[in-house]
Length: 301
Image (tube, rainbow, N blue to C red):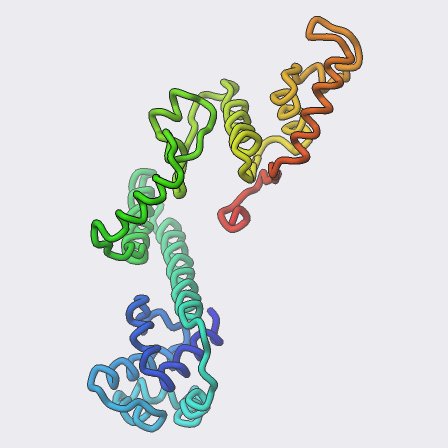
């Protein structure tokens, strides 16, 4: 949890009613607060706001009638705590603090759900695999359904003029980014912002080579930055492979140093020249690489 974010929100709600409107529009609920006293105070703030009553430390403290809720607030500092919050300066960028409180609430929910699943598995040894997976899937689905925020409602037609103007200024057969496969690009109309493209195939059938060629086309031909996150090979292996793609010299020739002698793949002087050109292209490109065998969503982010 982040107590500081909770205090900032309560303090700003006391000082500025617009903060309450922003909190409600962003979906902040009393249950999102980790500290029970702050949860009670936020409930009181919402109630006073709905009744169009001026909100200050005294009115907020007095509106709490439930004895249990009152004790929770008193144990946390009572009226003195609320007055200290009211005296706090206003803070900008309230959305950041709202999202912070909701984020930590979601983490608590996920942690408790995992704990419940573990407890259930320990207590119920008779459940088969399908039952366990079904229960786990249902619990995770419930979290996703409750906490996935829908996009804002869009009025069709509002941005048509802007989008048409963009296409007039930047005419292109493909609205997205080409990956280098003409037929694929034509069917998909190119890769667009927000796309998540999955390339599936059996092991050792050329997935990495395909994606490396796509990455090469995007960063070398289209001059766009690329971040390649690899879970299997380090930068040396992929760098040699990229050199091979750019120079059209077999990877084995480069790896074994055979580019310095004449072979069936060309004369040494020609191969060295092609490798020098490929090296120059690589240095001028924005092709970035990370080796991450133990990747997680947090690490990737």
